[in-house]
Structure formats: C-alpha cells, structure tokens
Length: 487
Image (cartoon, rainbow, N blue to C red):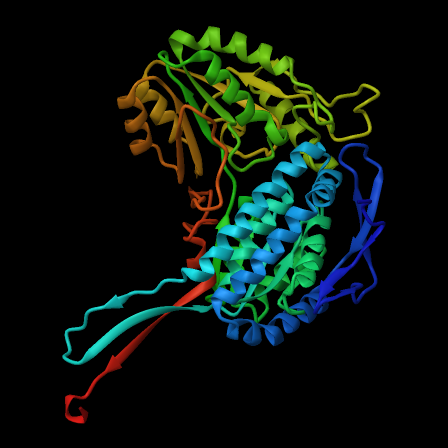
C-alpha cells in the first residue's frame, strides 16, 4: 500500500479535514523525504470526534459483551488477512523493514483476539453480606468515552494495546495518533468500520500534542484517558486530568537495567544485550539502556558486545538489524546528549554519530552507540533517550548490581543474566520494576500479560492483560435484598 499524500481525521465513520484547514508535514524516517501532509487538528476537531464517540457509545455499550467480542474477532481477521498491506504501512511510516512491520501486525492481531475473548470473561464477583437476605455483587460498566494518546515507536501495537480493551468494555473511543505514525491508526479505523464496528465508536484525530492531545484530555465528555509517551508529557497530562479528577493511565519511559553476572552465559547475554539496546533503533520504553556488568567479566563482555554491535546492519530491508529513529528532532537530541556525556568524561566505545554514507545520509540514522566510564548520577544515566544508545557500568558484586539497578528514577523493566537460581530470584524480588526477566532481554511483552512500571515509568496502571480492563471499566456494586415476609 502506498502512503497517502494527504491524510484526514476519521470522525463518525467518515474522513474529515481539520476545521482550520491546516496540515502537518510528515517525513519518511528512512529517506528524509516529505511523505505526507496530515490534518493539523485543534480543539474543534477533538470536540467533533468526542461528540461522535459520545453519541455512539450508548448503542455500543448495549451490545452484549460477547457480541462486541465477535466484532473484535472480525477486526482481527481483517488485520490478519491484510497483514501484508498493514505491515507495509507500519514499515513505510516508521522506516522499519517490512519483516518488522509484519511482526508488529502479528502481535496486534494476538492482542485483538485476546480482548475479543475477554467479552466472554468480563467477570465480576459475588460478595457475602453481613445482612440477612442481602446479596452483593459487582459488575463492570463502561467508563464512557476513552481518550487514547499513543507513541510512534510501535504504531499498530500501541493502537491495539489501548483500542481493543477500551472497545470490549463498551466505550466510545477517540484516538490521537502520534504525528510521526498516523497512518496505522487511520488504517485500523477504516478496517474496524468495514468489520462491523458502528460508525462513531472509534474516531481518530491527527495533530500535535499541545493542540490536539491536551484538548482531548481536558474535554468534559472524555471519561478516561490513556497515554503512552514521555515522562515529561505524562506529567503535564496528569496535571490536566488531576485538576478535573479524571481517570488517567500513564505508560511512560524507562532507563532499564540489564545485569550480567560472572556466572552468566556470556554469548547469550551479549546477544540479548544487543537486542535490548538496539532493536527497533532503541525506540522502546523497555530498551536496555543501562548494562550493569560484574567486574570479573567486564572486559570479556565489552569486547564481545562492541564486536556484535559493529556487525549490525542499518537500513529498512528485511536483512537489516535496525532502522532509523523516527524524526530529525529525536536524532538531534540524542547526538547532543552523547556529546554532552563525552564532555563530562564518558568514553565512546562505538557509534556516536549520524550515518553519512550514500545509503543512509538522507534518513535519521544514528550508529548504535555504546558509552562507558559514565557516572551513575550523570544525566545520561538518568534520562531516557529513546534511541540506540546504551551505557556500561562496572560493579563488584550482586548487591551492588541491585543497588545500581534501583538507583534511577524509573522502574519499568529489569533483567539479570545468571546461572544461579538464587541470584535470579533475589534480583526479581529486590529490583524496583514492573517487569523483571531472567536470562533474556529487558523488552518483550504478550497480549495477556500486564505491562507497566513505577516511579517515572507510570502511575501504576497496566496494559495489556486483563488488568487493562480496570482502566477502561468502572466497577458497580449491586445489592439485592430479599424480604422473607414476601415469600
């Protein structure tokens, strides 16, 4: 599928230009060429989308959850049948390979099917009462209108994680797509309509965060907000939602530790460290951006890790290991952060520069970057960069490794490589993270498992998994009272 040269909002089942008529230029991350002009939405456009969702929501909520699940299954089937087309859209707007785009589509289909099945399992509870003749039970009810704001790194997966739990719970939805990856969201909206989702239940608006995202959060008819993105923006949206006592779910950044102990399988640890740090061009909230190494294996690991990094191929072909970062601004920010860290004493072991050869010069390609001799308190140790940059740290033992893993302000994911069951279990117990892993990578999630973190990584909510139902539904307690005199 060719990326459209013009992209409008999807409101009430129709493609609608922004009220102001303005557009944002969207550039191809691989080539740097102008790719499309997308709607630059404002408060009026957001209001139109919210009004459409509000009007459609009661009818959608009235559809039994099992039947809502059947429609989600049809959406999943359509995504699967057109996986080549959707995968090409993902690849085209992100600069990834088609293979990576297809893999992302497969994960989104799994997510759709999981939440379709939850239509048969929107469980409540029966609760004993201390009053004779009284029966208490709880049921899940829709929140109402869900405002969803997603990041650009894995566009169709990010749509799936929020859209499908919101729909199965009976909500109307307005999704503000990332301005760098708008096409997957619009593709999904059209496919959902074709699969039988009633018009207005799922709406998509495009635009900038301050102009379209914030009006979505502050709109009086939006009942719940779910945001994936940077901690800085998450704080701002939390303030806006908090002033209105509005429910908000925040899945934010990470500065995730990958610990390698002296008893680890070193080749396996290097392989996973490379994937954790550099796959998806490091654009993962769960990326392994702090690699903590036990002193006895430090030098051996560094030699293998630098060699493996040097062997990586950059590009958007299926034989390449990683692609570009999403835009020129991100690339510039990372280059500035690397230079600043070097100025404060960090040693550059690999990368650190933009690729300037003929095949890459037009795109936003950063050579995979490794730094060591970095102070754990340095800014680069405590700030998410969201790109292919990782730092190495030396520790003298297990306790120091755990202490350093917990030293940052984030708490999203953490991993340890060790052959010791004791070390592995104790690490998982002691490390402050929402997701912990033994002998693999810091990234990787499945549709039925909860993902989220603590500290600067989020506000405690979880997506996906059944825990996501808590974000998009409200519990109602129903008390039934029987009068024995009426029997």
